[in-house]
Every structure is written in structure tokens, then in C-alpha cells.
Length: 233
Image (cartoon, rainbow, N blue to C red; front, side, top):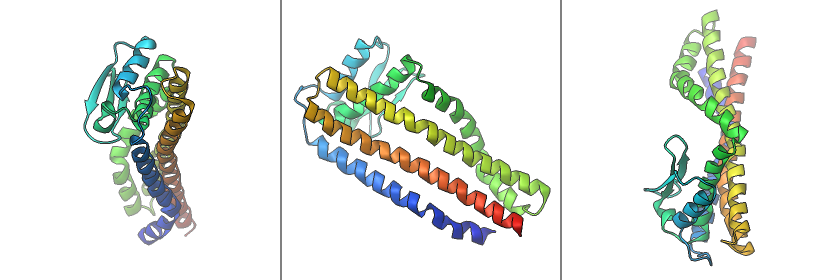
């Protein structure tokens, strides 16, 4: 069974290749357009503040966090965090990333359904994931007993939850990017050409979420194949 599990790991290869490509693509695109400064002359944090205030979200704080592409929006804490490479930058990449996070804030304001679904699934997934490998190991040890089969089914269910989280995350990320691009273009903060560059940055970042979904699906398929092969034996 262990032998089959690792041999069938080859199923993950397309997903791993896609993940490596996506990561290199977002890094290359972000750095490329980090050297292109917007014509508006505003920093990413200033633009984010402007859009938040315009949307009536003045209670959301904008903070600076260390790192690169470590930006996020925390709805519970009402905090929009911009990384060192984004906060004070006037580059097209920085403005695109900052407005993407503003897009997430707007999703909560407009009660965007996919983000509600995602937030409902994540706590359950986190609890189950803490027990995931324990369940898989117990399922492998007691595989040829009824108890072992149930451990295996629960473990597969946990992987299925991860797929659902990634599936719910994908529309949230692309919707946030679409909102960001609309804000930038409609407000004329960026020119049409600059908005096109920002789109390249945001959609390159979106590809990393596609890769995560593909890997999670392939991992689930691998476990189902192992289970199916061993049940036949």
C-alpha cells in the first residue's frame, strides 16, 4: 500500500510543474512592473486609502508588514496589510496588489457569496487537517479492517475539504482582481496601458491559486486510486 501511494505520486507531477511555473511567473511579472512607475504619482498605500474611504470603509486600517507579496486583508481585525515592496511604492505592480486587497474588503461590504462560503469551510478544514495524517496513518495500519477503512474515508474527506477551500478561493481572488482593475481604470488612477500591465501582475498571481486547486484535486485522486486498488485486492 505504501509502495502504491508513493508510486502514484507521479499523478501530482503536472500540478507541481504548474505550481513552479505559476510561482516563477508571478515573481517575474511583479518585479518587471515594479520598475514601471504609474503616472498618477501616488503610493500604493495612498491609493488604497483613497478607495477605502470612497467606499465608506474608513474604519479599515492600512498597516505595513515585512516581506514581499505578503499582502492580505483581515476582515475581523479590519486591517489591510501591505508588504514592504508595496506600501510606499508608486509602481504599477504595487498599486495593482494594493487595490486587489481593497477588492477583498469590498467583497465583504457587498456580501460576496463565495467569500462567505470560503470562510465557512476554512475553520472546519483547519480542525480536520490537524488530524489528517493521523487518520491516514491509522487507516493504513488497520487498512484490512472495517475500522481502518473508515479512518481512510475520513482522511479522504479531509482532502476533499481542502479541494473545496481552494475551489471557493479561486473566484474570490479573481473577483478581487477584477474589482481592483475596475477601480484603477474607472478612477483614471492608471491609464489604459498601465491598467493592462496591472492586469498582467494580478492574473499571474491568480495562476498560483489555480495551481493550488490542481494539486489538491490530484492529491485527492491519488488517495482515491490507492483506496480503490487496495479494496479490489
